[in-house]
Length: 193
Image (tube, rainbow, N blue to C red; front, side, top):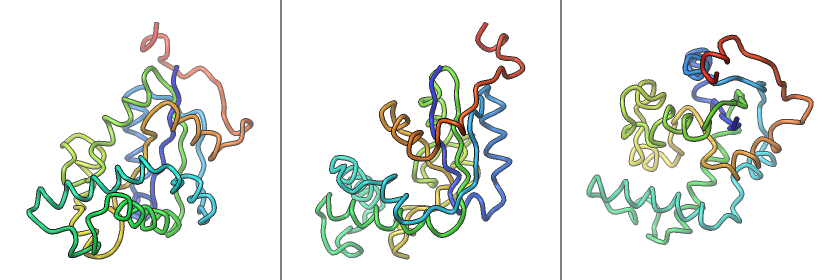
């Protein structure tokens, strides 16, 4: 069994989508082994989105550049640069501010290939590009160019761990061992038997 972390971000909490989002994960068979609501401070979020992960920061920058190219817009008009790392750092700062705007619901989900399943269920991180049937595709409509023009991150409802290393790091960051529970969920023998 694999574990993965999900954050229902402040926009998901403020829009009253906590139940809808959790229901989707439970319906597919994922087990909630830890859950809490917290209002994160900047110190915690700086650990969640560490700027020293240069490749990750550059990926944020590349997503912005790709989005602008798809809309035929010049990224330099918003960011003043086309440098991947500088753009990624700005996006990271917006993300850090975003996650401290209000409470988040933190879930630790467990199941077979939970990381890939949750990523598939959440959809593209840019809601305007997320497929129907995904959380972001069904419940959000934000677009990268709109968010950037307002100098804010995408309001995309949820964060989901991207890989095993990230999931393990985030689990330890957000939960103490005594906050994680092992129990038998009804129907496990049907799903995994």
